Length: 163
Image 1 (tube, helix red, strand yellow):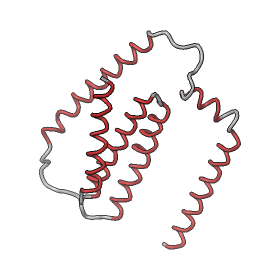
Image 2: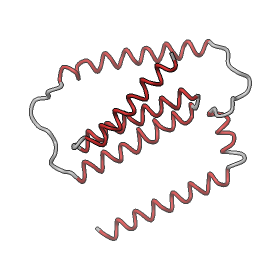
Image 3: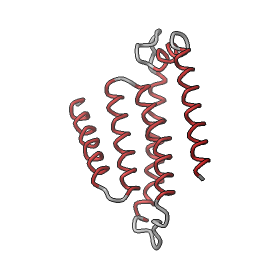
Image 4: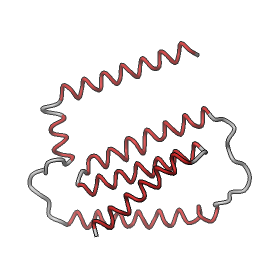
């Protein structure tokens, strides 16, 4: 069963990567990239790296893709489609399907809450990584955040001088 799930997720990752490369529309390419990043997160989950999967979804599929889509919309103005929505019937199915998935998530969380938990955090879990980040690796973690802040200020200053 695990092999079949891996093959399915790998096929989705491969097809979405090809779609990203072959699509001429930048917005469609960005959506293929979101699918690819989601499938990579699913592969991380299969490996037991829950923290990496969550970071993949939150940081890359969330924040970075919002930035990409914003840049695409700013750099390619006037590409908005007008007229009747050709996918209206699919969009009407989105709300019930979303509610069904939310119900499924609630059932899965309720079932997991009833399961007995381990006394110690396994290696690679969010708790273990959090403990390492804020004990042994606190100085490098904070130094990295200061460097990223300095880089962001530098980019803003460079962009402001050009305008």
